[in-house]
Image 1: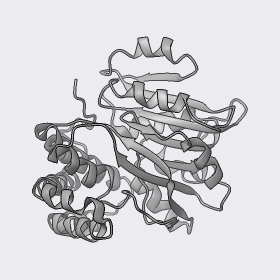
Image 2: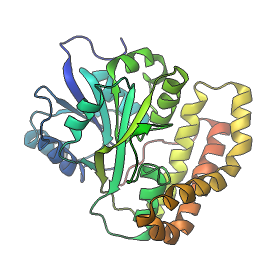
Image 3: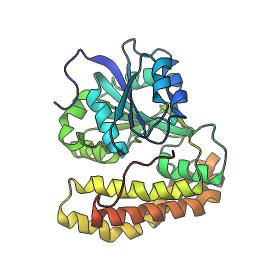
Length: 311
């Protein structure tokens, strides 16, 4: 079976992937607990790997939440797939522990899924973490996809949706289960849905706030590892010729990504100045990501632990 079918369906499942630490998970779960006009039968699923600490105390505090600790140092993709496999929702929403949904997040997701869309995503705003250039660089390049998910945006068809703020119809997940059962990489799943002529929809009404504070040493390590992880996941459904193509062109990625940032941020003038100031760090992170991709295409998952922890 692709996703859980051994019990009655509910309206909405929310899968919270916890990779870095449990510190911000409290804010995320509190925000989910305080949702306005959320479905009465919502289920919340938290998935973490064995290195995440202090989960037992949260189990008592959030007694209605389902907590799963997956053995071993797992990647975000494998944790995400595990959580989705447990889900009973007709709609399955996905976020991460350091993103806090705004109060109408669940209601807005359910309203949007009345439309004919396989997947729906929203915007990612910076939260309460300090306004350092590193935090802004990580927010813009990683969480906002070089400014793509940063408000203001217009509702409409999208070419991608963020793994921090995305939801899928159950039927779309079931139809693509062979692609994500062992590891759910959101960009690759989204591309598969587009290849099936499904519609991805992006709306400014579904908002999460990203609250992760990070220093430069952590940021550069994670950029490299996430590039490796993306390439490794991509190879699962790529031919040898495609693998060679990706490896040859990966060194050109930083220029393409920085161009994307400039184009996106030029339309969002309220954050353009901070994007310019953070540009050197964003460029460094883009280079490290592309280096990780290049080695990922050459080596696959050999010699790398894909889970990234701060503890």
